[in-house]
Length: 458
Image 1 (cartoon, rainbow, N blue to C red):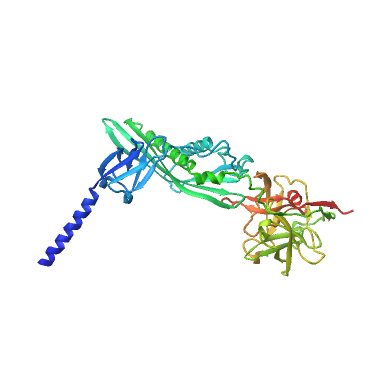
Image 2 (image 1 turned 30 degrees about the horizontal axis):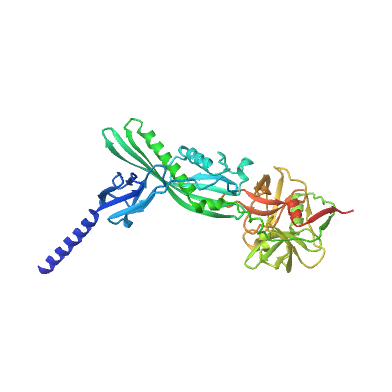
């Protein structure tokens, strides 16, 4: 009997403590005053300073005031009184600062209930209005020349959108929209995502008159909330810093070129009865280059062991291991390079190698081409993939050949060849966020960067 009594007392104390915590009064102050407190738990809205029971709060409480950045506080962080400073919204991009070129590349969601076409325009217009020079094409990347020149690719993913409402008087109601967008920025040159963060936006329509067109009212409020979630990323200094073009970027490039011009004597271009004969012959001129824990591709440009590759394949090394098509491994010396143009020359001992024929003529769009390299694994050395030239692209003052040839990690430094047997480019990168988009350095630009000229054999 005594034991049961004690259990009952403990249970009552626990319930009382829980009830006391849930029914505790909380006051929220904002500066400036007059912000709206939005809690989704019971679609509650209050104007600050507010005093109410904690039991009415959801896990996240939004504090909103027009033309200010919303503040989000968690229920667990709320004490008896909360003071919040709401910052005035300001676009952190400046007209006096130089920024990298950028394209609003992708806007998507994994939520099948969200109709993207309803919201794409408002997000695109907000970005266009506030980010200097941003391109916001309505077409997929690569289908026009304009949409693929930019160094930075901006993507937005709608994580969620929702509404909260309450009646504020006879036939009147307040309507709030809440949106969350995950923003990411991909740098084509660095070949990596350089920014990724979720931002939330809130918008409130007060004192709306109840109408039969309530669905349209909700849609407009959600659009406004997505606009606010877009403005939130423009307020983020870390986001803006990714776009800034620093004056010393080009000065820091690592370069070592020959003091005097290197001349390569080229013979007549061989002819081949079949494409397979050309490919078979070209494979013998291609190599795999191993640099500590990484590897890439390369190809002979002279008979005396001069190999062209990418700078990022040999970066940081004075010597590399060169694997010939026959499987032999030789020590190669890194002799010249240009980090900015991402090209390098490696020299190996020996004679009578087969240098590929180099063409300084511009390769036309639509031309059939193939690439030879070592994709994914060293054991796959001298793999061949084919496609066409999709166009020319300019990024950060450099020209690139765009192709749909299949390119994977390890292909870097390999040749892009037309079906006459001319090397037209040096494979350098692929788009990791899209299929069928690879880039190559025009061979003329590679030669210019390394102070190399071609002469016909007399």
